[in-house]
Image 1 (spheres, one colour):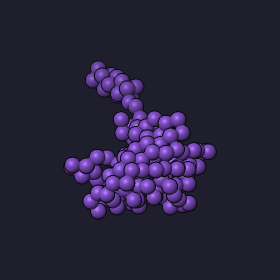
Image 2 (cartoon, helix red, strand yellow):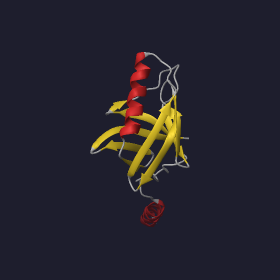
Image 3 (cartoon, rainbow, N blue to C red):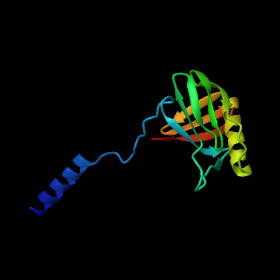
Image 4 (tube, rainbow, N blue to C red):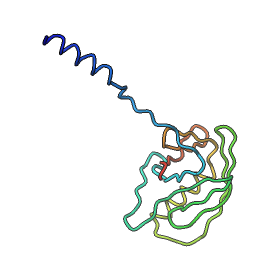
Length: 137
């Protein structure tokens, strides 16, 4: 009797087991707010009194915030290729914010390809990863 109970519990547990591997579906390039999370391999941390650096793509238009100034413009894609044309306001901010902003605008204007892995977007210039972004709701 004890053996039947153990076998029954074992069978039941095997029946209810699911793969522990979680699969994350890729996020769409468009209509997703992409927050800058890493530049040249260095994590980007939003200051307590600051706003996230991000961009949003929709209907071939790009808009966002570069750390100090807003950005706007257009973009085009073909397969994994991407091209941005951007403009921004020109206010001066503290040096650390301007460094992030300058890098962010460099990454957008020099990006040639992109890759989305789950909720992470990576922009590349040739084989070099320029920046990583995380999808934010």
